[in-house]
Length: 427
Image (cartoon, rainbow, N blue to C red; front, side, top):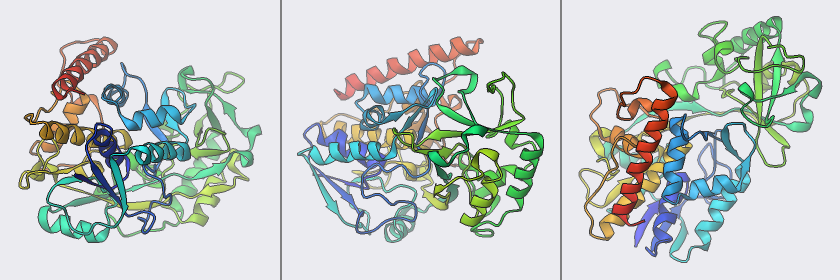
């Protein structure tokens, strides 16, 4: 029996891949007996920060390409995302509850998976550890004693009630017209924007002195930290109006976008507004945006500490531990960053276990694929190792000048490599 610890995205992905192929799996999850500071649902595969899995463009975005690689390998995450999808332009966004329910139902319906509610406090001799960046204190202590660890801080964004949004102050549109009018856009004049930024920077934070600047992951930068970099930083980032026009065809000075959090459209998340402000300050500052003047906040943003391994010193490219045969790590604790990347590492770790069970030598996909590039990134010596998202920079270069054609060829090359990996692994 293979033990998988943690029923987040990576652990659920790993357990389901093996269990659905007849391998007996014990999936250990400490919920609902115990929760991390960021989790609140009893279901598996809970999405904590955002409900977006980023771009779904296979031929123009590295994360979109990674999704297609995973689909071809039978990913549970991708199946759950398709079943719980909500409109989000060119992005793949999901209804959180339906997504987690789908993952949970598929796991519990698999006769080869035994779910146990337990907090694992000591690393097993073998199995897959997918406890995430919020690994419980006891297990994290054991991991640190054996392998060391590093950490960073990330944050989540507030969610508001759809019925409380001032619709007279919004317009519906997707950036560059890529979608079916899936975002609510909250425009700001120059005066409104500058007031918002000024109050945002000066607002009281929940944890003002518990982390250093180099401990904040760039991909989850709190909006107030970003705003402090310069008055126009948000206008060229999270609040950029480029590609958006109101009903009169005019481009606003700045725009906050709201994205559906559920299929019913009763909840909207503030896109790119991860924050560490105190709850009362969040309501005060975000309510300065005209469309959110009377907004009802269903969930406030929070910040939490994420831990991860110094993977190049600990892991091989197949996510196995260098010094302990049969033990694998998966998910964000390995140093991949993002929902999709985390799930992908769980899927890959499971495939490698599957190959080992069937007497096949390890085969790590080439870095011509996103799966292979991420696998090799976490195992390549790096004095300044830090979490990495899917991106074209980690893929093997391709000598093509025109950007669109280059990415098309990179996608075709990646999917060819994944087919080879599938054939070798007999999946």
